[in-house]
Length: 159
Image (cartoon, rainbow, N blue to C red; front, top):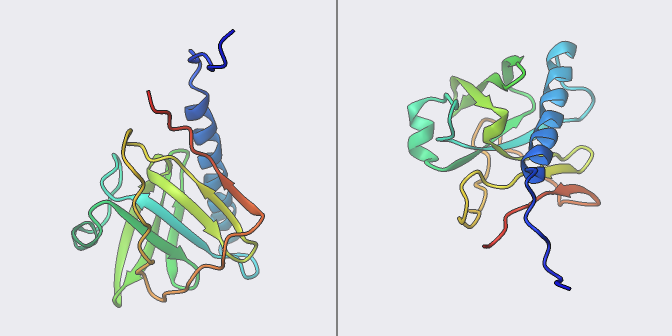
């Protein structure tokens, strides 16, 4: 008998990734409906800047050619959530910007208020994950250390 796990014809890793990204959408949708963040909740969202469907100002893609982290906390406006992504207004160096981010582009979500985090596999295969840059929108707040509520899913396989 072989100890090797057979290749699945069902893309479980993609299904789980999509389901966990839907958690991000549901949370943002609740914030949109409520009109503001409840309590001390705030979010760090990391995404691929050149992923299909991402629409951010050119000066941000120039500064963050691969990945960027934003903070949704005090200074944000016009949060709009759809089935496939979200739009939000944020300030970068005192300049307002509108960002449109599909959920498929998100690589990390963190709510330091309750120490909850989700990490997603990179969309590009056979590429080592890069370090996440510090968030650059105004104001900059550092996340708390990750704790017991961290969910990390990485289904990358070497063939």
